[in-house]
Image (tube, rainbow, N blue to C red; front, side, top):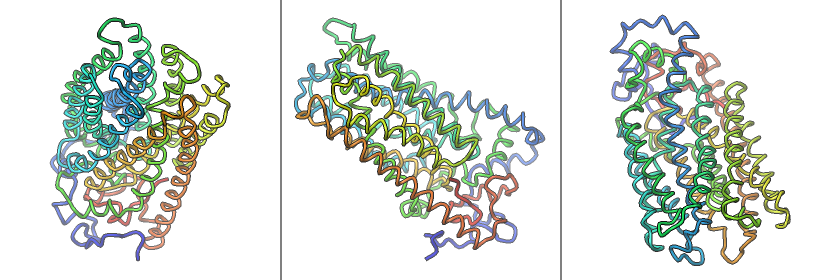
Length: 512
């Protein structure tokens, strides 16, 4: 069987091989429709590098900055639940045994289940608007934590939070991949993913501050209420200010929109096409890419669930007070930010995404080994290991961009973005379950699980890069090296925005 084609789409129905012009108008991307409607727009600025750099800066300001805040809030909710454990939520709600871990897993169960409807909703609805609606609902759910009285209520709000937050990473992936070439995307994914580190830092400060609150309305309740209300307000700004596509960007002129589309057409991945195409969905399900990277993210998420949900508990188990534990976790955010930027900037300028992903993962694995095997009385060594394990988070944005940049066709990309988030959520679902109440205070099972799952995830990265190399070589032998047009602007508009998937387009080359 041809390893490069799991779906046999008649080529004459999509692209005329002689002229590379689109014949099937129903499959074309909305970007091509926009370009046809603005054929007379002046585009001389496209030849000036400074002009294109100015466009990128505008997108960074009006889109990427908002996405960074979105992801900061997205992670802040998770880390607040982590801090709430040392602020007395278990005592206030009369939690026993593994109730806290089960509620943490309930969040990720809901997050995973929501991946299926999100595949269709991200395809059919305007991405920016759907993101803002999910932000609004999730902010309300976060605020409702302040009214909790028992374990049943906790389960309910954690499930609702998981359902609404599921959309956020997927929407950010789709939005940030529309405005930049595949190489430029690497740094942008890393920038908004730095929100994870910002969330860790802010979470420590917020937890420290609200631990000084006394009275009948406990500090952890006010903490959730304040963050939830801010999220609600921010969702309104997202609704009006974050465009769904470059064609709808309010901060760009028609000339700038055309030049931007001409700039990113070399990706051959398309921008948006709201028409549902079942063949693209089926191709996504049967694509080796999603299974390889999905397994990798699942394994990384398993360890990530340990750090996200229980890091404050681990630090407190080293003998620190809850207040000091909150402050001591703040440097973890700096490590997460540094790792994300190293992987993103490195792959932007030097390529080799797989190598930079493995590098930051290796540092995280080393930290996990220290955490698992350093004696419990060595507080300095254990604290250093908590910081180092956060390095692995830097692999996440690079891996997301790696696969999304290698996926063409809007239906397929929407499916991939939802499934990548679901795979990571499944891992985070399993992680908290490795914390057994009977193993207090060492939680040795959880510590050892970090080493095993993260080491196995490195193998997934290597398998994926081998797959890309083999497919590219197969395509070059079959079609000739002249078909490799990924990194040039010579590809025609009708071919770049034909709505083809990466499997259907013989000129497409995977980057690694």
